[in-house]
Length: 238
Image (cartoon, rainbow, N blue to C red; front, side):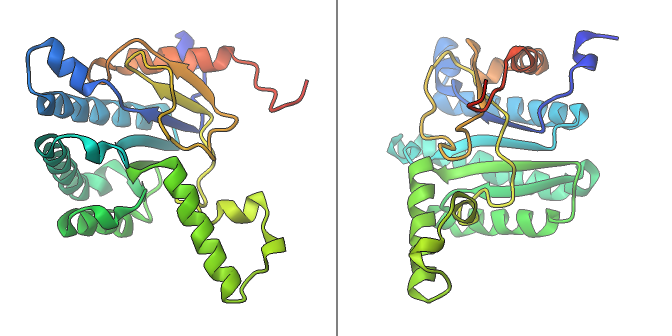
């Protein structure tokens, strides 16, 4: 029996899919080629997580800050997302994958919004793995939107300000009902969280890896899980 067969994966893994542009630049290719390669890496890792028995996989697909990139690059990313969702809708029953979307989808094209809603609705009863796409997502934006929603319910008389607790506030987040990730992986060698799930990752284990996302493979995920099992998770205790 291999070492990985002895190690149960975390229930929930989150990944900041970083390094597509640098991968393309190293090869003299346009950044859109890097995003295409990154999409293939996502397919590979999502399937591998399913075989490992990971229950939740959350990926940072497009941030609220990514709109600052060129129109060509943003357009290319959106086309890849649309193509993936059409493929996922076709194959979701075979793969038994449930989809959720975190982020403000209102800025996306009507076609992409429709595909997101369709994927969520049609996959709601599937259970082998849940893939959460952070799409037009920013952690601070998520918290502000949640605060506004709670304030609206207070104004409507559903709650009073004093009713607010961490548990109640979490119900207003995009991730409501999803357990917090135990492991967050950031490839590409960058050592920051980039506005990714600040509320949900307060006790997550972070593993930073010096490999660009398009080159990230099952062996890298294995290494991250092995590192996770080496950590002593005390949650503020002794």
